[in-house]
Length: 105
Image: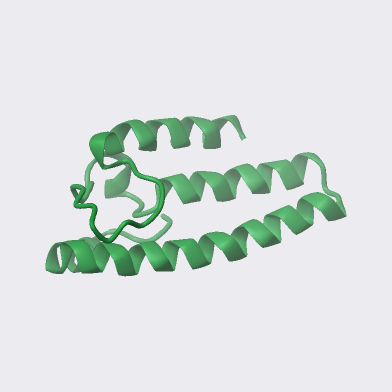
């Protein structure tokens, strides 16, 4: 869980001015492809998945299992919305990036 938190902080820092919350079609941020983003297109969501898995492993209960499953479903939806957004904003540059770098690892 600590590694997941560290990954989140590193990824947010590496996004710099491209860090955003939400998908504003008017926003034109740079497509970050270096650092941890060279290994995973979604390192922040990957870290969130790891955090929820760690929470479940630390306290394997119905509540933490529900959080793990709900988190996975919601992240899958969010990632797909973000991918469509990034494709719309960055076009072929995003297509090339998506071809080189896996979604998670």
